[in-house]
Length: 256
Image 1 (cartoon, rainbow, N blue to C red):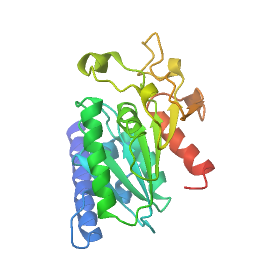
Image 2: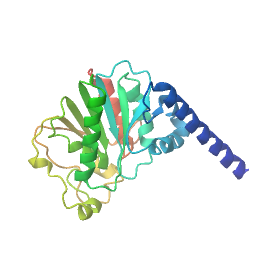
Image 3: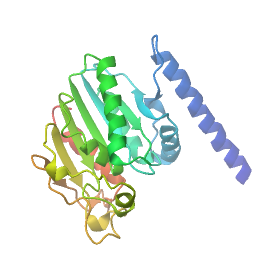
């Protein structure tokens, strides 16, 4: 019985992958673009399988294939260290439904912030070249991904809005030892719009064991939003913070 269920799950995963490839091929005109179909972002019982598909995408910008009406505003989603992808399924679906073009950015989380940011910056510059109609860029970075997105605050890319979610901007023991060139956000000159979304220290499983909340840092000119300790009666921890932030942004900001 167990083998039967395992085979059933395997067949379903292979079917998802096949459908994704077919959809991606049909959605491209002359040049192939990496990405995943919106229809494969399934929440609920299938959320973990959807997460596997997301994290199985190649490194770089991956397009969410949906009925985006315009490409004047592009939304970028940047995952954190060790992401399994499932925490992004609902946020990606919600963002795609805004009719803006959405990209999921897969990156090598073993890089230190400086080199990782350089790769991200290069990808964004290429994106502007590929889509000359883009006038506004919105970037959501979670956890360690929030570190490299925060590094964009002083880069003159154009009209850019940055959201750093549950990110240890003041440093994290595991990374500080490996990366002595940790960014000093206090010294950066803010050029782009920046909002830091902080989880409750004692509710965040990634920061709970630390004596000091690594999210606590002042970025001159930036905004800080403190997240509540629960969402719909459930603890609002590290991963669920993304869903909360995306929901808040899309519900309350008319620009979306």
